[in-house]
Length: 212
Image 1 (cartoon, rainbow, N blue to C red):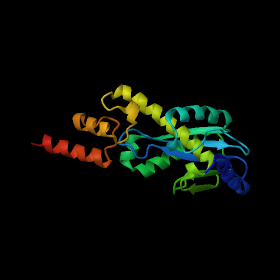
Image 2: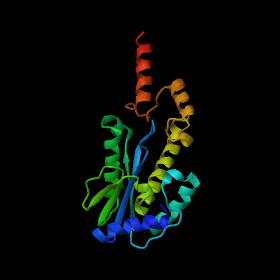
Image 3: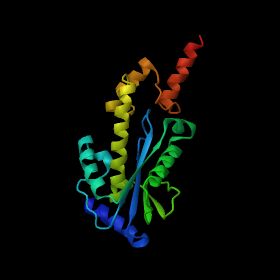
């Protein structure tokens, strides 16, 4: 959808709810390591932000450049985190919803409605609707996807300083061949998601060998 179409999509919801619309999205559901990070971006009618689209189709440099424009135009932004401990204790879906709720709570204002990427809504003090592939349909959700992705990438680059053996500064915790090899050689570190199958299976193998 063209960027002008993203804004028109949001305006359809503003006609129902009111001018201030919040878009919510997360980054980091799939990786084997690190937190899941959610963001909420509130935009007013008529906002145009060049370059905003689904963060997954953008380069890292494009996301960082566009985020500067998002922060300049947004009425409010919020970021929330679901920790590795929460991912393992609950599941990635619940940790993502917790992160989204925290992002909304961090806004400091209450918009008149929220659009959430995906199939789940969140508990909030305004109307809320889930939009499948919302980061490709809604300007506010696409902006949130960029904020969430840039924030999480920065967090994983910082974690690479504490865990230099795993290449988190460039794989961001995703299941790349390089990451799998590091896992095989060194085992999981403190920010690996032990509930995720590849990590869980590796831990099982280690426990079996240690039992001999």
